Every structure is written in C-alpha cells, then in structure tokens.
Image (cartoon, rainbow, N blue to C red; front, top):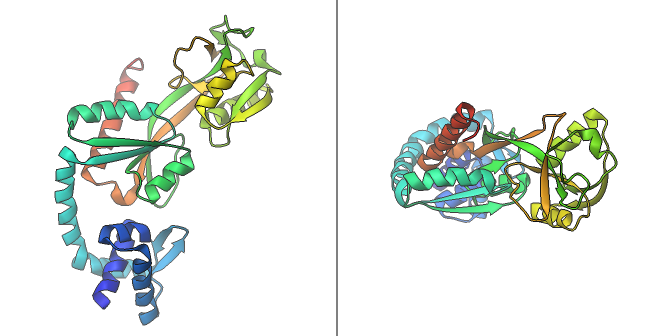
Length: 296
C-alpha cells in the first residue's frame, strides 16, 4: 500500500505534474491523485502546493523526496539513460512552436546528425506551446518571448527584424525603406493579442507618436497575407516569415529598430534528457554562428 503511494508521490515530485507522473507509471491520472491524497491524509502532512496543472513541493515534500530518491531515483535514472541512448538514434522528437521558421534550421542540423530520428511539429500560440509542454504533447518549444515559470526552462535563440508589408498596388510599394510617420493614418490589418510581432511594432509606433487605423484583426499569418493581397490594408511581419509573393512588397522601417525575439523552451524536469539536451546544444551553436556571421 505505502509503496504505491510513495512511488506516486516520487514521480509527481520528479515530473512536476500529476499527468507527467501518470504517464511515467503508465496509469491513469486519477490513480496518481488518489495515491498522493491517501498518503497526505494518512499522515496528516501536506506534500504539495497545487498551482493549476503544476505542483511544487512543501518543506515536508522536499525532505520526503530526498528519501524517495534513494528508493526510486537511481532506478529511473538508469532506465532514462538507456532510453535516451536508444532515442538518440531512432527516437521521436516533438516540437511545438509559434511558427515553423525557427524550427527548420534546428531540424536541418539535427537530421544530419541523427538521420534515424523522427520529428513532428505543432503550431499555435505561446499559450498552446506551453500547454503542449505541460501536457507532454511536445518535447521542445519555440516561442516569441522569454517565459518565466517554475516548470519551464527558456533560453534565447534568435532575433527577427519586423517589416511593413503592403500590396504592390499600394502607394508605398516602390519604397525599400520608410519612416513610421509615413504610415500615419493608414488602414492596418493587425494580428491578435498573442503576436509578438504586432506588439513590437505597436510599441515602436506609440513611442514615435504614429497611429494607424486598425480595420481587420486576424490571428494567423496566412490570413494577414491574404487580407493584404486583397489590398485591405498594410501589415507587419518578421523578416524571417516573409517570402516573395507576386502581390506583396516588404519595406524596412528606417527610423526605429523593431525586432522580436525567439526563445527555445522545454520542461525543466526534462532538460537533461539526451535528445533535448543535444537539441539545445544545436540551437546554441546556431545562435553563436549568427553572432559571428549575421548573414548566415
């Protein structure tokens, strides 16, 4: 009886969520919750502070986890090590990202080093990426801002210049550079609240005292391109995202440096998994290469 309760406690503490512990032990999440609840009730001790889907250890929980490490920790470390070695050659690596662009350079390098690995990519908002990590639908995420969290490890990966895009029939379509005051009062197709590109542009425009007129709010990049293709307004997009298009023209902003950042993230509890660790190393190498040669 106690063995199952202690084992459930140990893996919740180790994985940071009841869902993660259930996946580790190949049982249902309610079973884990019951075992931990029974342990706390039997001894009248609170072991976890519940915070939504995540949990953190109380002082008593920290002390107990030190003990259960001797019971279960080394056994699981051995299993994880063997699985990691196997997965480096033939495993699966699941990405979740706010866009495909930053992932592709990592995948290109990773596939050259580990051709046997299968990779998948889910796209969504920053909130979607964090949820994918928390719910173990993804191993690694790429997001547009640093994430401050007790469960998420986040490190800088890339910078993206923000460009203004217009229809090729627009009055500014012959320009390669513009100042922000030249788009004063323009109809604008804007991105949703989760778009770091739109936020970066709006902040710069506000600081310069430039105001555009939002006419359409669209969540997706594809919708943004389609609206501007139909000449419904101007918009903004990161330089990395912009691809040549017969109806669209991209323009640099000359009087403000507008950039967004990309961060690579994972669960802190999974940071030292061999495949995840190697992927972060690849991202770090790419970042250093860009700093040495910005055109690479």
